[in-house]
Amino acid sequence: MDNAASMTPSTPFDVVQIPVWTDNYAYLLCPRDGTAAVVDSPEAEPILEVLSQGGLQLTHIFNTHHHFDHIGANQELIAAFPDVVVCGGRYDAEHQRIPGQTRILEDGETFEWGGDRCTVREVPAHTLGHIAYCWDSNRAFVGDTLFFGGCGRLFEGTAAMMDRALYEVLGRLDNSTLLYCAHEYTEANLRFARTVDPHNAELLALSEEVASLRARGKPTVPSRLEQEWAINPFLRCDSPTIRQALNCDTSSPRHEVLGALRTLKDGFRG
Ligand SMILES: [Zn+2]
Image (cartoon, rainbow, N blue to C red; front, top):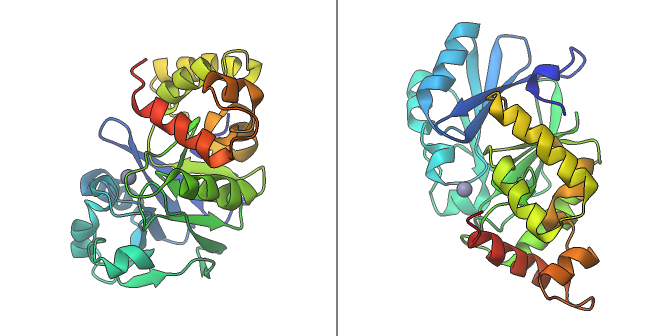
């Protein structure tokens, strides 16, 4: 399992994973030139501390969506770095729900930062304004859309929208892509996954690995896309085992299976 510490010098920027509160992650992107950007901003203090330790100038905030645990520190970061560019999607800009947003990123837009190129993808489902930051270095910051072994709750969008986000957008990334999600939910996600996919050997082996990492207080994130295809039930909605577990027959459209899975997970207290 890879994690942030394994970044090699050949990557355009390093990723520093900052745990916040019980299960949030903020990510500091550091191109080793004294600048940095942060993906999501739950709380200012731990982010400012890492910036200060490295003597880093924050140039960008890359917000994925408007939930408080992703934008809560925007104003404090802007106060500390008045020239910081605050990026988010169009829907959230139009609804003015990302504090201090100065730049609207469009679906499919590319921009250069930190020696790398990012393609912005709209992935409305968890919220209607959710975007993902997909870098040419095969690293994607996916917020609350795809979690290791799971997906985000459908607060504003539909199962069909999540189906599109997972299979038509994030699922089309290179299989080696590292997926940086915004929460450490892996252990609970895999516990649920085992209830609908109980004979999946890779899932069972991963569950042991994850339990061992968590017992030592280590992060399980990021994951790789190819691993998600093997173990994440929300990316395995065509699996006969999973369909059977949900009482969905083989002719059910995939998004219906995904919706049934999401509803079951919402009520899961395992
Ligand atoms: Zn959220």
